[in-house]
Image (tube, rainbow, N blue to C red; front, top):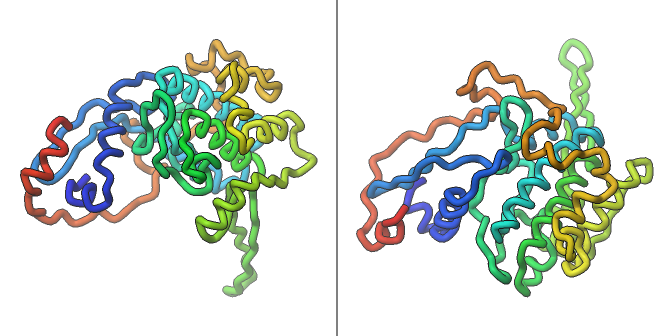
Length: 300
């Protein structure tokens, strides 16, 4: 990461938070940070490589997951959130793009730039608009409860929200291409529209879907955080004891003993084929940053 870019984008505190959080956690469903370093131009973070790719890629290719598949992913994510919250860490960026799969199909949360240790509450507006809890948008201060809201959005997105569009092209013969667009429940073309929908929390959940998962989503997507499942007296235990999870043996989940539904195709440990290919940026000799700017990262 280029130091000049981090300073220009005002990401200094976020990158410090990410290092502090990841260095202080150890959980099977959270990506590992092994080492950090900096020179006079860049910051470096050596992290665990998770070869299965993003959950988003699998969701996009399928349009939606089965109830069984969504249940598997949700159970492992609940365990990760419970662990973070036990350390007073709020994640604040739960979404399919930040959930990786290892070669066996288990989850790994990644991208902890918005994560933060909170004793009471924090007021920073950060995160991805479609997954922001109402209290973040309102700017009245927020805490661990925002992750349970985001879990509700994620479960909804994994199981329900699919828009299909078919396009016909004629090249010697008619060919039908079906494009799948996966949307969270609170979607709009601009952030302000998203915020309005989040604050109204109006959901359109198909009747034919599992009764218990609909009930869980409704209890997670509660605007008043004091009544939100996961933020009540029982904490994460209230979520785990919900009837949608009735088939889950929670003692074996953190041991990675739940049977994965989706097994990524991985040829070898360093196989990058499950990630999109990006053209490598041509390395230019960047000028060294000023001693004043470098001082910000002296302990990185």
